[in-house]
Image 1 (tube, rainbow, N blue to C red):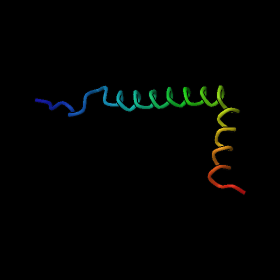
Image 2: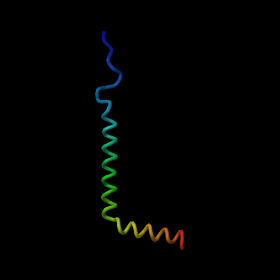
Image 3: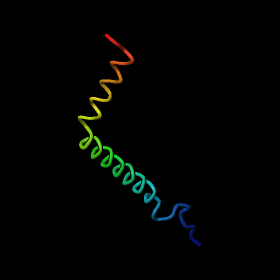
Length: 54
């Protein structure tokens, strides 16, 4: 009798799904930064000037 491998043939599917989810999150974050880039930069600049005045 032959023994079957303990891992199913689709064992890499979870890794691929995880990579696709990370890619989707990266695309969404990039889109948000492109849309809100100037406003976000001004907000961070004002926040840093409030915390660390010159």
